[in-house]
Image (cartoon, rainbow, N blue to C red; front, top):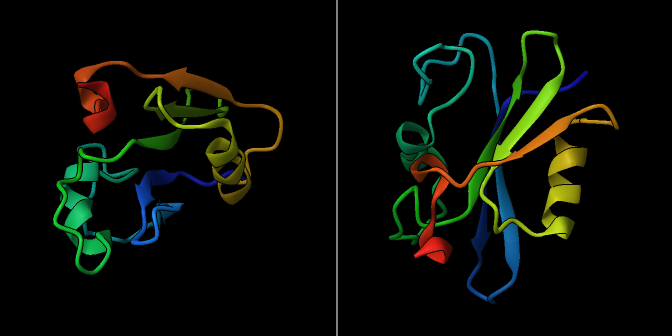
Length: 115
């Protein structure tokens, strides 16, 4: 079963990339998007931000997995997310082979890499 949720690609203290995932859970009321069917990165960041991190929610590359009106998964994400990170995202959200990637260059997904 494909999961919905949000993710960030962050650097840990050693400089290695790692991912933060938050899978959507029905009944959760922390950091919800307007629709109530996924999370809002800005609202959720305070609850998932790594200990000692002083960066804002939009500093790191991020994205989300949603379902389109045909029930197919769509991954919306920043254009700077590397292929190897996407492979881990794909695995974690159980995407399989039938999904669409939407590299979102809008203000909504911009991060420090884009300026």
